[in-house]
Image (cartoon, rainbow, N blue to C red; front, side, top):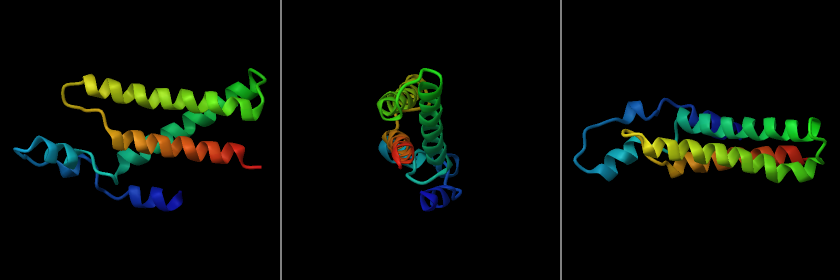
Length: 117
């Protein structure tokens, strides 16, 4: 996980890769690299939303740890998916499968940490 964060924090943000291109697919790809601070943010937000939801479900609603994991993970996934749908409706943004992959990695890491005995 640390290696992913270090590699992803390189200055290859979407802003750095903007170039005029007649090919929409090429310009969309350059705006959405696999490695960049945006992917780290998606990873971390999903991780922290999962942790926060898990904490509330276990400590405030008295759910068992293992029974709360699917719900906290689902809430985090829904938050990330909703953000991408909102981006798609914006005129200059698009639904990013790469962002959803980073979200999923964050949720998976949260699950592994929560269920680690």
